[in-house]
Each structure stands twice: as C-alpha cells, then as structure tokens.
Amino acid sequence: MTHGFDALSNIVDEHGLIWAGFGVTSPPTLVFVRPDGTHSTAPGSGSGSMTKYELELAIDDELR
Image (cartoon, rainbow, N blue to C red):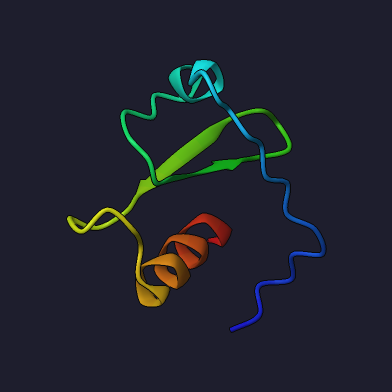
C-alpha cells in the first residue's frame, strides 16, 4: 500500500526525552507529527510491535 510519503524521519532518542514529550510509555510506538505540530500516537499490539495491517490502519486513520 502506498501512502505518498516521500521521506520519513527517524529519530534515535537514546535517553527517552523526546518520547516523554509525546507521551510514549514504551517502544515500539509510532508517533505521527503533523505539519502544525500536533501529534497522535499508535502503539504496537500486545506483542510489542505493529503488524503490517495495524500499521496500514494507523496510517489510513491519520490521513483521513
């Protein structure tokens, strides 16, 4: 599935300072940061990581 992202930034937050600012309590959690600075989070499933389907749903929800 193509969502039209040309580039995706990935930040290494070794000490969890950025995570805390977004309310992330544990990895892996995906944070969508919008151009206006607002954000939403999409935590992984109970196994700790998102399935491809969960990721696609989270992206689709964010793009609506």
